[in-house]
Amino acid sequence: MYVAKENRYETMKYNRCGKSGLLLPAVSLGLWHNFGDTSSYANMVDLCLTAFDNGITHFDLANNYGPSDGAAEKNFGRILKEYLLPYRDEMIISTKAGYYMWPGPYGDHGSRKYLIASIDQSLKRMGLDYVDIFYHHRPDPDTPLEETMLALADIVRSGKALYVGLSNYDGPRLEEATQILDDLHVPFIINQNRYNILDRTIEKNGLKETSKRLGKGIICFSPLAQGMLTDRYFNGIPADSRIKTDGRFLKEDQISEEKIDKLKKMNDIASDRGQTLAEMALAWCLKDDSITSVIIGASKTSQILDNIKAAEKTSFTKEELEAIDALSF
Ligand code: NDP
Image 1 (cartoon, rainbow, N blue to C red):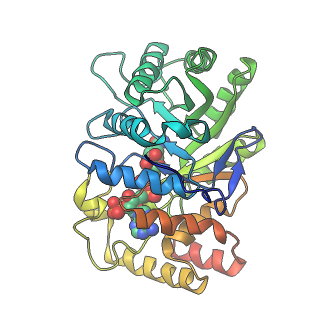
Image 2 (cartoon, rainbow, N blue to C red):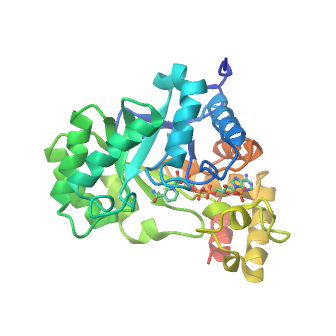
C-alpha cells in the first residue's frame, strides 16, 4: 500500500489563486504527454507519486490527453484507484473540454451539449464524483459566450466541479466571460495559458493584465516550451526526448543551431544564479505575483525533482531580466 511521504508539505510553496480561497502549489504536474497508451504505466505511477510526495497537489488533465483521446484520464483514474484515492481531499484535479474529442457535431468546441457530456465522460474515466477545476479548453467564437458560461455554471451547481477555469482566452474575452460568470455567482478562479520566456503572448493580448485586475489566477502551461527551455537539446536530439518519442507538437525543425546557441547563453545566466536552465525558466514565470502556478510536464521523475527547486529563488535582478530578454526570440 502506498503511504505518502510525511514531510511532503515542507518545501513546496502554495500560492493563492487570484482572490479565491484556493491555494495551488507553485509547481503543478500536467498529464498532456507521457500518460497515453504508448507510455509505460509504471513510469506514470512513479511520476504521480514523486510529484505528490514532494508537495505537488495539483494534477492537470483534459478529456483529449492521450494518445488515444481519453487515455490520460483513464490511466490517471487507475493510479488514483491503486494509490492516491485515500488522499483525494489533499488533491486538486483539473480537466477540460474544448478541443475535438468525439465524432459528429457534439464532440468539440463550446456548446452546452458538448461540455456536459464531456465532464460526465471525464468523471467516468477517472472514477471520480467531481473534479476540482473544470476548464473550457479554448474559446469558441461560434457559440454564444453565455451558453458556454451557463454550461460551466451548471456543471458546478450539479456538483461535478468545484471551480471553473478558462483556457487560451485573451483579455477582452476574459473580461466578457467574467461578467457573465459573476452574474451567475460561479467560482471562476483561474486562467490557463501558455507563458514562458519564449512566448509572451499573454503580456500582449491583455490576458495577464485583465486577469490580475479581475482577481483571477494564472497557471502557465508549457513553461519550459515543451523542453526547449532546458538543456535537453544541447547535444542533439536524444532518443528519449519528446521530439523523438512523440513529435505531434514539438518538432525537430524548431531546434535550430542559432536557438541552441542562445539557450546555452541563457543556461550561463542560470548557472550564475545557481540554477539549472529549467529551474530558471520556471522561476522566471513565478517571479510575478499574478502567476499562481506553472504546470510542468515530465517524462522522468528526475525532471520533477529538478523543477520543484525553481520556487526556491524567483527573484531576478534587472540585469538578469534584460539579459534574458536579449536572448529571447
Ligand atoms: P513543459 O514546457 O514543462 O515541457 C515538459 C517537457 O520538458 C517534459 O516532458 C520533458 O520533455 C522536458 N523537461 C521537463 N523538465 C525538464 C528538466 N528539468 N530537464 C530537462 N527536460 C525537462 O510543459 P508541457 O508542454 O508538457 O505542458 C505542461 C502541461 O500544461 C500539460 O501536461 C498540460 O497539463 C498543460 N497544457 C495545457 C494546454 C492548454 O491548451 N490548456 C496546452 C498544452 C499543455 P522530454 O519528454 O523530452 O523529457
